[in-house]
Length: 263
Image 1 (tube, rainbow, N blue to C red):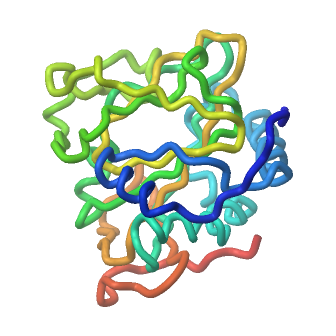
Image 2 (tube, rainbow, N blue to C red; image 1 turned 45 degrees about the vertical axis):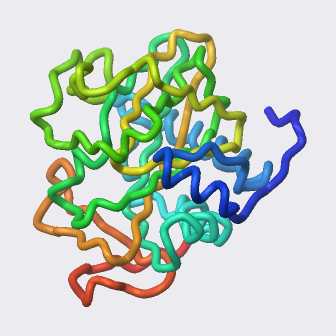
């Protein structure tokens, strides 16, 4: 699986921080070691094999709620070091999600902003997503695509969306095409273990996977500790748990954090 030279990076440079803030995304190197990625890939294989009948591998949302083993990645010091460079030292783990597109029939992710889905739950909306390549992520197997600089324009409300076929897409709605220029999209191809970051307001999506190779990524989502989580909002009927991963709460006690489990 791993053939190229493997270098681990634990901090973003000042140039990378500027690029992230200007463009709304940042293609990064590797934060985890080869052994750590190999262990994660084996774990994901087991998770997919254990899925109940009818549940697709694109739908493995908030797996860490029931699988504490994943916290060794979510709150790994090297991850939090890079996140701190990008959003500051007080860090909350907001969410995570595996999107594994099966070979041959992996669903598309329609164009959207994450902030449109979370806007009523988080104030202010300041979330950064680390997208970690468990498999190679290529144009052929449906890598993520972004619209550079789109986080400055913020087309967020759900009335900016139109319905799409849920049997062919991970979500059932997409941002209306007249609101952005798809010709400016950048394909974020990654080798195994590489990652990229994007802002909650960055327009992004991905094409279906019709290739012979699976495309699995782990989205690890964080926010600065001054963001208030409105707990009366629920995630598909489930209470959503957040964790103070590093530093101090900056909401004046408005947030209730769940304890980080043993892992």
